[in-house]
Image (cartoon, rainbow, N blue to C red; front, top):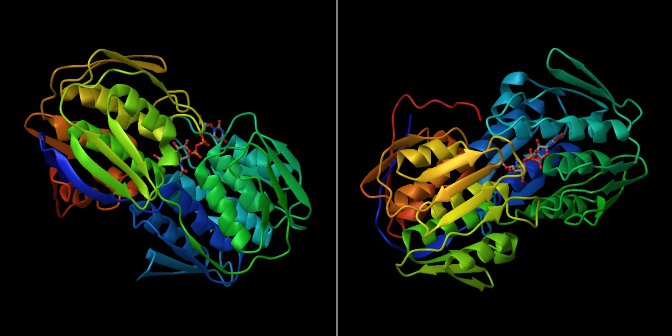
Length: 431
Ligand code: EPZ
């Protein structure tokens, strides 16, 4: 199994180009099921998760080909015909977002059998709101032996759907199903993450009529068919925020390019409050920190545009060395503090009570063997390792490979002492 070794203490200087957003790319790939014409996605991240969804789509009938163009990596997806409406447990279990193929399959063919995703390390993560939305659109849903059987033989019908909470996945799923429904759909209390607007832009380029995505109310006028299109994936705001925190942790000056600073404004506000210099630019931002201890600040995660839950673990790593006590409150997922004991192995002083972690800043961290059970927790250990004394060895690197493209190369190019140790018996495990 691959591991990443980091020798802490090197200051960072240089530029890091940000990749296309993983959490957008996956849903955009699923959108290719809605048309028999080619969908060309550019600025695509090359990640374990996108490869993984590509494999599932191929089983459903999509031809997937990859190339490189002027706007980075490209993926061409063509689903002339859905050859199977069946997404088996083994594939959905390994990546929850695979569940999103249910809506497009249903919209295009009137039926689908998709495995329930099952448990997850960061929280229960039910899919009740996904199913509620599909039922509101007229789907008949039954569940047997861990599978969702969905049918809409006469097609889906537009509806008014009010979500009780902001769910990224359920909102995306409802849009993906409603674009081919008969009539108008209104989604109220929708999630407003930038990935929603990206999905709507791509679908509109394919001939859909989606208005208001990126806000709390989304209007969709169903159309009878969609056509091919070319779409550039938005920059990954979580990768942007993670490298911003990494630069602040290590110290030095790093410019993040091919991205947007407005996507991570709450993080920037907190970094500035902690004493980091952040300068937004047209195509990204520069992070600067010259020695001296940071101040402890409090954060609370929330739906966009609040502080992103996916940046909570990286920010907590930064706070381990701050002066004073920082309070971190996680309101999105109930089990998202798995990095705490691992940061403790590096010498961090953190206690957790319910949805709140208290981080008492220490003078220094010391390298150790660590591992984590999800992507964002894993990268928080890399960030801590950048500033820890001696060597930190992060095990289970496949979590990082799910969501970060060439992480060690990007950090290494700025002077981080980081290297991947490969092993023949690398295995892929589940989230
Ligand atoms: C997306 O997950 C992202 N994943 C997550 O990123 C991210 O942390 C999350 O949104 C929040 O921003 C992808 O886009 C692939 P939700 P998603 O539905 O859509 C509850 C990463 O590391 N809920 O917005 O699954 C749920 O349990 C990943 O890249 C229900 O109760 O998140 C949670 O408490 C991890 N019923 C809250 O809503 C439902 O049917 C928000 O979850 C659906 C969700």
